[in-house]
Image 1 (cartoon, rainbow, N blue to C red):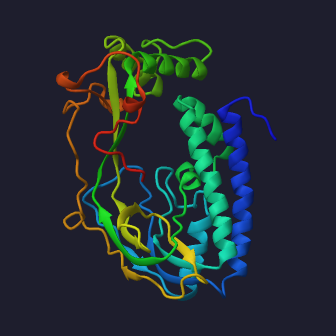
Image 2 (cartoon, rainbow, N blue to C red):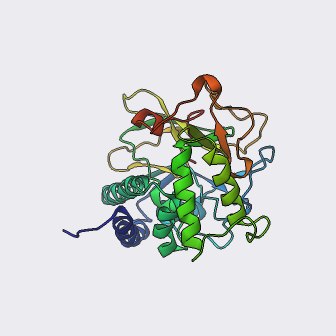
Length: 325
């Protein structure tokens, strides 16, 4: 058994292992081209921009024939950035694909590695420490590396749809963020910069300003909230299990030998802000305006402010429910 001194070193080892297993999966998929069946797959082009225009339409094209097979193999195995892909984008090709049992088994193996990687990254609390993992793999998209392929047993109905934009966020203690951002400044420079020598508009200036403002909050719990782009879900009936909505950036897969017939599929249409389903925002707990705009950092409403260390419930708190996309 390989021993690791930290979650960082273990995560790096898991990424290396995942890359190796995905190469095996690519070979299996290519060797099985004559046996796999693409019931549906939808092409979504990259936007090439880090910022999301919520009003912009997103064209969707249904692929057929060899193009569909190529797209399915690519999205099921690719964790590296494409030449035209922005760092904040992910490769998305939702669909439904029937595969031989041995390929399904390998996908389940790689899913286990992806889940383990996500768990290890979740243990690394400081964003700068997480960067130490991904800087070893500059060509890899972290989200693509950690997302699992949904494996179905006996799919009956799969209805794809867009869910409109919302927000994703996490709760922090202000004093903990002060320590984290001070450590980040120390790592960026041999001598901690002051506001006088920080270039205007620089990361350093933003961090120093944020640290100064956060010190005034002491141990108050605060929230960092970020907008998320429109994302794809599918309502899935799998065997006798209740229908459930599942985030669907990659194809659903199932064993072609166990399920001879394709499920009924409602195709994904192009995104239109006027027709997308809006995510329920839930109860709003935050101030309307950010406390630190550059950091997307908000105070909670006075009636919901808490002081002191986070407990498990608070660590998992979201506002509204977070979106993994």
